[in-house]
Amino acid sequence: MVDQDGKTNYSNIQAISLREAQSLRIYPTQVEGGNFFVETSKPIPQAKLELFDMNGRRLQENDWAVLEGRTPVTVNHAGSLPAGAYIVRLSDSRTTLAKQIVVIK
Image 1: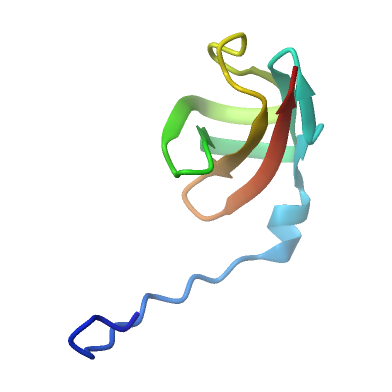
Image 2 (image 1 turned 90 degrees about the vertical axis):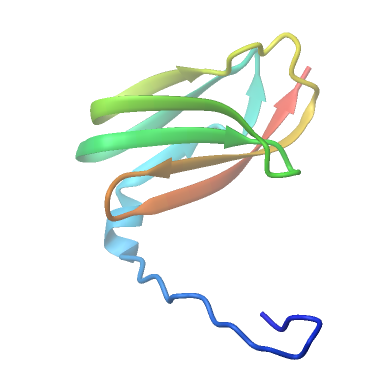
């Protein structure tokens, strides 16, 4: 990042294990009726799912002590949520997976 006064700052580098990210799935990418699924091939302790609009506002947060298998997720206030693109972020203490979903009416 370069500030207006010319000073430069660098963010920390975050390593991502592709092997771990491949064991997680968020689907379908087109969501109708406010329901989608999170699927994992191994248990994930302290999992958190967040739903953001394209302005970065967090609209929903779901927490699980242990997330495992195929888990349905219902978007809160799906009836009042406008059709459009949203970001779903699933994270634990080591890994983050972000995926875009499109809500259709």
